[in-house]
Amino acid sequence: MDIKRVAIDAVNEVIVMNVVHMDYKGQVQKRINEKMPLATVKGFRKGQVPKDLVEKQYGKGIKQEEIQKVVDLALERFVQSERLNLLGTPLAKVNENFDWDAEELTFEYEIGLVPNFEINLEAKNDIVKYIVTADAKLIDGQVERIQKQFGKAIPQEAVVADSDLTGTFSNEENGINNTTTISVATFNKAAGDKFIGKKVGDVVAVSTKGLFEDDHQLMDYLKVGHDNVHGLDIEVNFTIEAINGAELAELNQDLFDKLFGEGKVASLEDLKAKIKEDAEAQFAQQADQKLLLDVQDFLIESTKFDLPSEFLKKWLQTVGEKKLSAEEAEVEYARSEKGLRFQLIEGKAMAQSNIQITFEDLKAFTTNAIRQQMAQFGQTNPTDEEVQGIVARVLSNQEEVKRLSEQVVAEKLLELFKEKANPTTKEVTYEEFIAASYGE
Image (cartoon, rainbow, N blue to C red):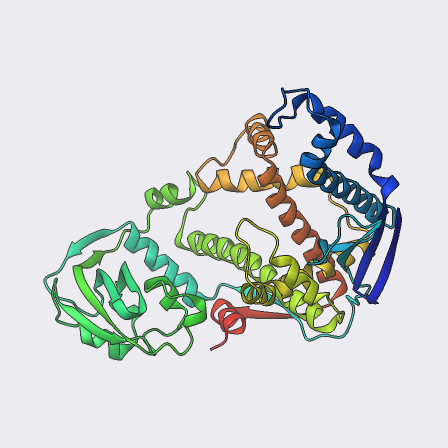
């Protein structure tokens, strides 16, 4: 058998395989001999059918099966021996006039190759690493929310400026139907004034444009997707189902112990410090995620290379349970191209910096994640034995191993990007961070 690669361009090639009679003859005869005792042909007893009739009835199918086996095995070994770094898998070129009886059979397979490129993690950029602080406004608001949450709800006949409303936002045409609890003060003043004096059962129509100080609150209260938040200008109805005032909980030791454990917070100053510490730890995670996304976007934009796009679009039509049309594959490729580009960049960055993921890395990451999760449910001092038992169960699940490995990679890359990309550090409030992340 003769096999060769024919280059189309830097990322597209065709593997050409010429198969001759001797490549498959012996296996075809073996299969026919095995078939003879089992063959059934009208007019002959089972096992007594002449060989020429067996070959006539079954030979063509057996020949094609055995040739395909030879070709598949040779293709697999050739890809391995050539150490080809493929995107997708080889695609057979269709020949409607293929002659299985020819002395020499030619098979052609299209392949897409991973492009060669270099990345510069230290290239000049305008990436910002945000240090997000919890300001007095945020902390005082959280203190008030705690007092309301643990205070006593007092039913009211009619809405006043400091009422809490339970009700449903709805707009059938736009698929909005969300029940929530919201304070009148959360609305902008013009919208909030519409509720004053209303009673249970009343329906208040408000515009989504400027309904809140931050448009992103539409995501929380109306369950509007982020892509639809900016500039959304529709009318929604709010049906009032309950009106409550609040007798704020007293900030005392009983409340502090209930929230944080006995003796860990002893004063309002301690409470504010704890809120600030917890909030800024959460903000740091969000800031790291934004940094990672910003570096990804920068690297995708600044690292130029060609992909075998037409090959990949054809390949997408052949994979998955549901076969895609050419139009559907086009859409799917457009949706996934950015992710594919960064996946290749990510691999190059790890190789250039000799980053490897060990089982110990994975185990340590999982252990930390389990401890954090247990702490959220009040288990602040689990034993090592308890934690390691859970870790062992988690790491016995291959899907979990894959998911956690991706998180370990992201964590290692984040540290690499912090070091190499040299981002500008900027301290901001949470409101400023949200504006920087999502825009006005």
